[in-house]
Image (cartoon, rainbow, N blue to C red; front, side):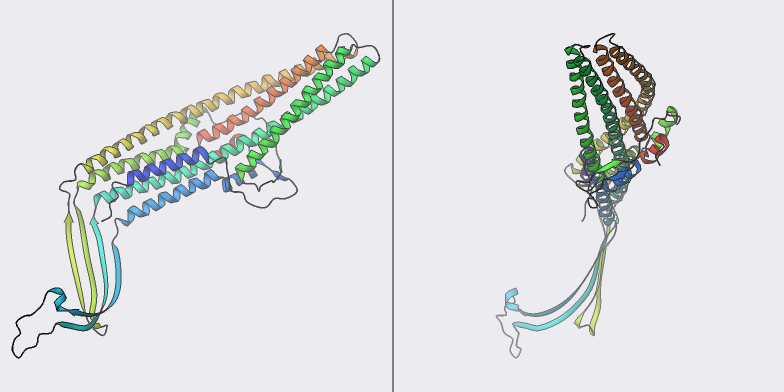
Amino acid sequence: MRRLGAIFPVALGMLASLALLAQQSQFNGSVPQGTTTREPIALTLRDALDRGLKTNLGLLVSDSVSEVARGQRLQTLSALLPDINGHISQTEEQSSLKTIGLNFKFPIPGFSIPTIIGPFHYTDVRASANWNVFDYSAIKNHRAAQEAERAARLSAQDARDLVVQAVAAIYLQIIADSSRITAIRSQVETAQVLYDRAKDQHDAGTSAAIDVLRSQVELKQQQERLIAQQNQFAKDKLVLGRLIGLPNGQDFNLAEDVPFSPLTSPTQDQALKDAMDQRTDYQSYKARVRAAEETVNAARAQRYPVGTITADYGDVGQSLAASHGTFSFVAAARFNIFDSGRISSEVVQAKAELKQRQDELADLGGQIDEQVRAAFLDIRTAADQVEVSRSNLDLANQTLTQARDRFSAGVTDNIEVVQAQESVASANDTLIAALYSHNLAKVELARAIGGADQGLQRLMEVK
């Protein structure tokens, strides 16, 4: 008798744990594909997303979890179908009556009683079947497994959004790294020019030695910033390569930038509505609740009678040509009389599992609402920061130009120039951070709404 009432809730818990483990620890890795080339490859954001959706380890693990759930469903389905077996046997036998206690001590005159039977032989060709015609607990377990499989498939689809989110975020980070390198390199060039000018003026006797030292310190600081930013740029490229399964050691260049564009749609109310309809993780949690409900019903249904049929049919004889058919057919009902509280304990456990799933669903609904609202707040704030940062950068550049002119004219020392350089560097960093934050907030919004792959195309005009 195959009983799944006790083990199926545990199986559901294992599937949920596997899915959670995949989400927490697997999305930073991938299965590398292809061979390394000497020349760097050009990588667009669309290319990076496509590669990630094919090779990211978190997505592959989620697909495996979905297959495990499919196997669980097939296992519960087998409890509703008959087991049919066949066998063919050829028997050669000789028996001693004494070994089974037939020892005749009183012989009959004129009649010889044999003590050995055989040898004799016969052939048996037979098929047998066992079928639980009605098992309400097994029916409910199967429905729970169907919902669990649906939940696992939806979780695998949600894993695609997580991959898109991770890949897009690090791609945008690399763009920001590249912009910072360009800005810092410009600051290095400016600092070099000012250092050379201060040195020339000092050699000409029109500037103090402190001006040369001050400009030299500024030059070294900018060079240090450039070295550190180039290192960060290289490390972030390694992270992206791991996420999308590039061959080990494969270099690449970003083939496109993601320019700033104000968000025009959707509205926040529309996004909140779409999120509840489109988020596959939310639909997955709904399926988990339904699976837990069916598991409770399955545990209770163990108290109901189970109808079984056992049958066999075969052909027995000294040979297949000299044989005769035999069969048996048994219909029975099996019911529980006393289970020592086992069924009640399983009902309690199943109810606790159901309560947990319901609480998780309610919590996820709150998380989605928070994520959508937070994404809109970040987008609006970052857009305002971009506007202010651009204005601040223009003012800082104007201040630097005036300070350089005043220093060249001998009106002041180079303290003003160094301060103006730092203001320009700070304004550049702020603008780059604001642009990155704005685009990253769009990525977060696409994830919060659901269908991140298509959402990015709409929000960021990625082809």
